[in-house]
Image (cartoon, rainbow, N blue to C red; front, top):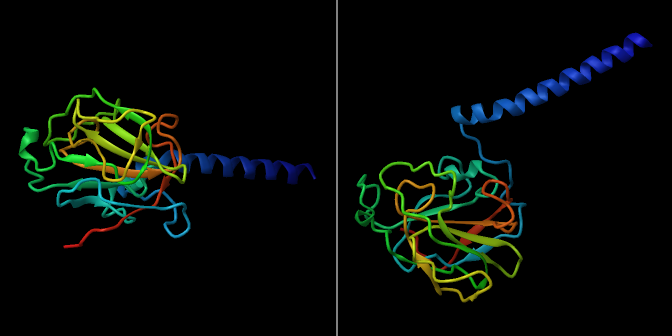
Length: 219
């Protein structure tokens, strides 16, 4: 009987060690082959269907459910995030004015209440990844929807944020201008939908939720 108990303890300990080793190796494995955060688009809810965050012709730089089309998908909160660009883009210039998205008016994609609004972060030099992990969203606005979930719109131009926490916003209302603040490589509009308030849950620690767009034409 003692022999059996000892073997079971060793087996359980070995399993625990193996599990911890696998968890520790996950970041390394994602460097070799990035993996989408394990969440199912079909069963994760609630989803949000909203208008586009600008009136300019927008191109999806990154977005969707597929890791190959959306590098954000590795992060729990940004599982279904989108990065929108305006031509010209990918110019490689270090002048933000050389990118079509820079200065574009960003509007509220849906009606709601401003849960958070942050300004004062400087624009980063475009053309290279900024690796700004101190304030990765840069200047941003978070809107609480009637579903008690949140839209986060990030990388706004410093000094451009037009709303404050507690403001009610209408769909299509200007909330700022596109900039290059935060963790970014060039001016673009980042948007994602998450369950928790971003003021209470830091980047990468909230649950991402599906996000869809209406009233647009695919080209």
